[in-house]
Length: 434
Image (tube, rainbow, N blue to C red):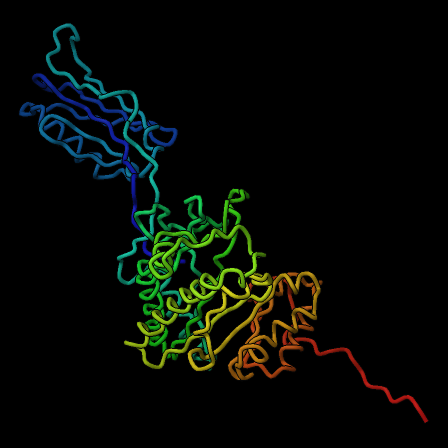
């Protein structure tokens, strides 16, 4: 996610040189700064009119005139030199100062460094700025606008997808955007990213993201087409970046638990894995998918306030949801052919395991189980492993008459060197008989 970021807890390392006494005409004052394995030795020849303040200012001007790794600021007789790079690395910069006196025994002018190294450098964290407008940063906006314009110029329709992950999302409870396990820990993924929840705080962030993308697609000449990419992928019992099991599935952020308690007058059941029967917990089975449906409804409504012609689709993975609980709680009743322009399925693990029966079931799911017509159904196929039957999956999708077949992804297609157009089936028909 190319979101706008803000720095928290970073510190710039710095050191000071304090000048005192009376400068002696024609003596040389020296400040040495060790940076990136080399030492920059800065010198000032004392003038007859110099004071401690003017010498501090002179070094400030020398440093700021030509050094990119450090900067300086003088205040009275104190010169402060800063690392231009944020973080603890700046504390490795060395600092020393010297006055080359004709007679050190009678010298009355001094330059005293604060220490042998800069201090105060601190490595903080980048966090997503939840209030920045636009939400998408400048580089991502420019790239996507150009990409959409190029495809539009070729007469190719464009869809933009977002997942519910933020690389720099704030996991602290006070931020209110993280999905949480029952033990209170935030859901961190290997991408690396924070998995966000379905609270109003999270929705307020994401609705502006989708609106930003709709705006730049429209500016490129396209009719906005936006996908809820992985909003329903929230039910894992593992902290994937640490390979560490947690006590529950991640339904337990404050908004989800408090809203459930207020609605049903009791705490939500603690689900320990996705094989639990949703029939044993009808309140949770109705409430949890309703959160997702309300979330996507809110975003669609917000975007259509400024782009009434915006189109929306959902990407749904039958393989990830191939368990009793997930089949129910990850499929909101709000996702119908009346509310969505397309229902797209994907099944990377079915393709990888060469299970064409389950792959065909996945292709047919929107049409046979959810009432979507073929013209509002689509199928996405992973093509990274050339030994899998992904071409058979393409042909099976085309045979169902779906609106589109999406190959994931273009870079893999090009790197592996698949031919275009795709190879046709090698089947042949032979008449054998009298």
